[in-house]
Amino acid sequence: MLISTFQQQFVEAGCDEAGRGCLAGPVFAAAVIFPADYSNALLNDSKQLSEKKRMSLRPIIEQEALDFAVASVSPEEIDQINILNASFLAMHRALDMLKTKAAYIIVDGNRFKSYQDIPHQCIIKGDGKYLSIAAASILAKTYRDEYMDNLALDFPNYDWLSNKGYPTIKHRNAVLEFGLSPHHRKTFRVTDPQLKLF
Image 1 (cartoon, one colour):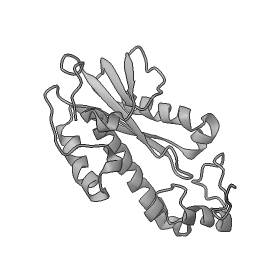
Image 2: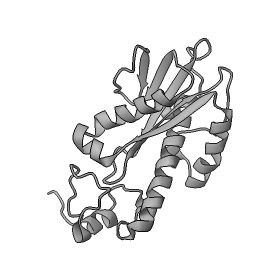
Image 3: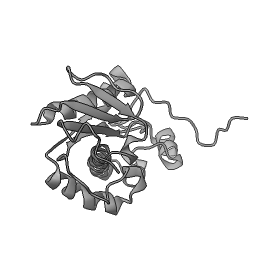
Image 4: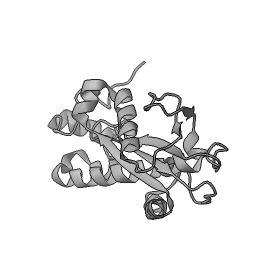
């Protein structure tokens, strides 16, 4: 896991999102700025870590980062502007919340909408390569999971405690049986899990 060569000279923010492929709930994004000499052997892509490990790393990231922010975009906004643009907007909102202005932005994935006048680089699988992106992925994931856990208390039929809004078979069956909740993305198609393509 690396600190980029750019970060050794300039203030660099790493960005990532969570919840892009979900049927319900907001999409969350985080932006993280680490000191130039920062190192942490435990940081990795949030998808490669257990929930317990992610939660244990979150306070460490928040304490040791020079700056961090977490933001979200609602299901209603997702339906209005589509999930790709909503992911960009969530990252922009997180960057807006930073108290420290970044001179450079690195983003997980292959697409990003330019933010202000700050140069950026998209890095495929960047959450497994760069510390600030890995940290952003962990923050976005843990904040979103907590949000969905709280929603699940009022909407137990959808099993959000387990699926966090992703389109599992149980979740899709629940939508077909109970209909959409106020927190579902209405533009996302929900198909019968029993249907198969031949």
